[in-house]
Length: 300
Ligand SMILES: [Zn+2]
Ligand SMILES: [Zn+2]
Ligand SMILES: [Zn+2]
Ligand SMILES: [Zn+2]
Ligand SMILES: [Zn+2]
Ligand SMILES: [Zn+2]
Image (cartoon, rainbow, N blue to C red; front, side):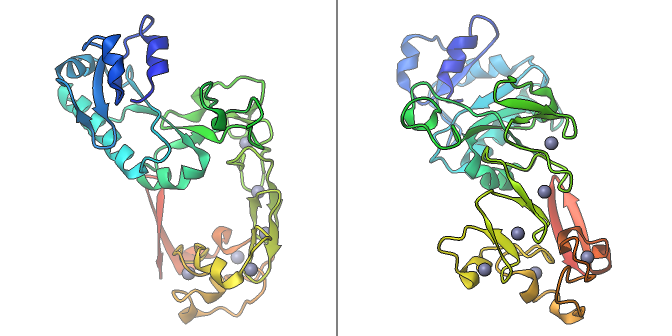
């Protein structure tokens, strides 16, 4: 889907089908391997039959969808299309609801949007460079501080993706490859960096944060120092007690009723070595339901 160079690379080695919005490909590629297609609304401009024949008889283990949408595209439209293609594949092959392997190429700063739509996708640290796209490459003058911001989001287990050792390392604790600069944090139990910088663990936040962040005791969080305005910043935060957006823990309207007397350290137990997210007493006050990687919190 929108990844023509990959199709040209694969077409003589594997079975591959290109869905793309550029009509010029029809001059080179026959209907058995190309269909003019808009991935924003899952619209096939030509006959869809050849594509259906391509899907027919491929099991979900044999089929991979790679999509490289323009970065302005709305993630909810792309994910809707991905779900529609899965449904089509499942219908044609008379399968029960079976996931297909997805590789979605997109910038790391859209990770939250993608997670909202498809929580089953995880981000791989691999930086994608475009040879024909000056802004998104790490070679040449225009290179960005930490290399390309473009990453791979996938539902394939990350431990199956072997990355080159130049720039990446295998993390035994995470059991997957991560960027060299992405140092494992034992407290957070992960390689925490999303942007390729080396994060530092802040004991007051009890979380790993970007290296240039400074801790604000008022907001109880690390953030950019420049232009920081406590009250504005707090309206953009997710509460570590109730999980809702718009306030921080000290102002949580859902928790005030059963106020504990702790004002320093963890508000639930008073200890200084962790924050409310990781408090052993959470279950006394909240019920957490996890479904498809998404957690909903109920105050008891
Ligand atoms: Zn790790
Ligand atoms: Zn950490
Ligand atoms: Zn902090
Ligand atoms: Zn602040
Ligand atoms: Zn709250
Ligand atoms: Zn606690």
